[in-house]
Length: 196
Image (cartoon, rainbow, N blue to C red):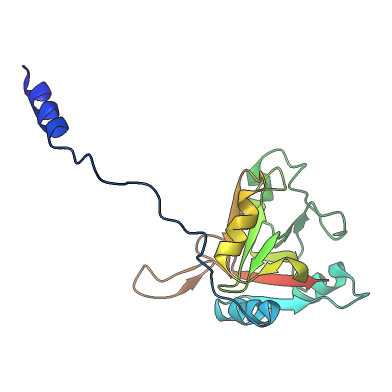
């Protein structure tokens, strides 16, 4: 018998046969609940360095974004209601064509009150718009804010989103010299625009 076969036979003879390796039952597990999930989402978004703007009835999203970023010249979005977009992530030839985007405007599907993050599925050809833009605006319906990550993952699990990402506030790191750097890997600032 070879050395390899000898080792494998010893493993096989010492296996525990009576152990139960099935997954535990998580059906009774409930995440944190909030009296007002939208208010909690707004607070947590600010805590992680983002900002939230509540779009009032009759207010134009384009005007709100222009007021938030008056210096911006290049806006990228594939949302039909965004008329200020100068780039469309669905029609650019390559992701690198989005380089130089001042403000990317995307649709968020699920907001999570527990940590202020937003699930953004890839609803555009070039998802780089979420990460290459200097500033990111996420349009989110207040009806789609859930209490916790458990609830968010339950919704995601039943939809075939393909690629998606949770984004919570601006990109930041303090890895080097313990100095906080904003916008190190993605947007320097994130604004969530809550709609009805």
